[in-house]
Length: 447
Image 1 (cartoon, rainbow, N blue to C red):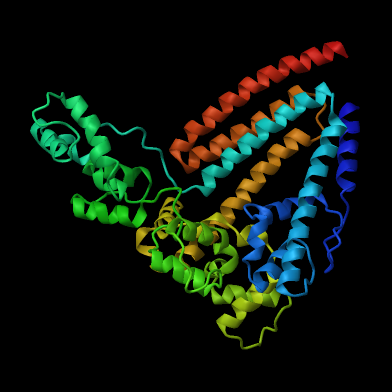
Image 2: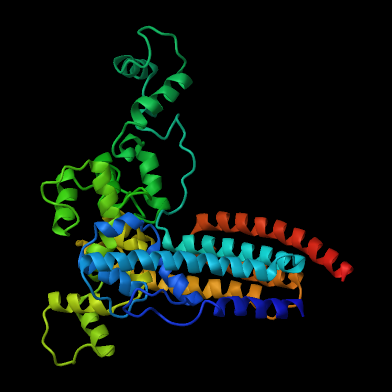
């Protein structure tokens, strides 16, 4: 009965936020939960002052993505509408949160089931990371005595190198363990790329563990060449390796800065990051011309017999395609090495890897969509377990843990290292489940 009442309260609080997208005027209207969810992705990382630097076309696209049907006006008017939209969104989001919180305040039974929901959310995020990350199996901490190129150097060689770098004094009495520790800071941490300081055996193991090459080459030169094609840092983007002139050229080409602007590298990188997905056609590089044409025909935006150039097709679909999640998919900003690694980990033979970035993006998109579909299905199972018609918190937790077990098995098939993470999550979930069982039993006794 309490759960039924709670569900009615939650549904009531969401419908208070109402029903439709905005029209072309400035008047803020009500938001549905679905609209809030979609808009949150669009607003993420966008600051108020960003609107002042955006072009008229970018502002119009932004407004369409956040609910305006046909935004019109000057650039200044569009910027004003964007600020108003942001303010309305923030207010609606706060109201939704407050309404939901008020509806359930003080209900200890609900608080217990909410803890189950937290377990499910945590598991969903973990499951998602298994499929969307191409980082591969963890290698563990590196061993100073064998995993670096200098690990096999003699004490005299280590000492000479450190003396030349001014790390230790000439003729200083330093044991080998200490010499190796100092080498990490003087040699390994200063290496660029980082893997150039790794030993051949460690590089070979990295390539194997990440399913890049089954039988890595024996020569160091070829090993480094393979790493150059597949190694990446999870914090790297496609523009991370761009020169200052390339960064500036991109910003100028996309009308974000003037050609005579003097801007530091760090700021240019941040500006590219803030504008890359919205200002470029990166998303359409992941589609073939025939796929774009097919989508436009299927949705009634062009006739099948129409003869249209690719540039025109891209321009048209860019104004009609409104799936914000796909337009902002994280892989669109990955460096080429990460795209290659993702494809190798998802079974594409090295001989079939595309040589161009658009080709890599297209192959990743195909597999990424499939992976996301499986993630969505897993998350829905967890949500059904938490919010389904189950009467007790204990039963809810049982259903969630059953789904988590399935997620762990799925991860085990995909990646060996993911099993360890899944087991860790499952252990934490079991601990929380035990705690919730006690709370549920206590609550039953009180009732």
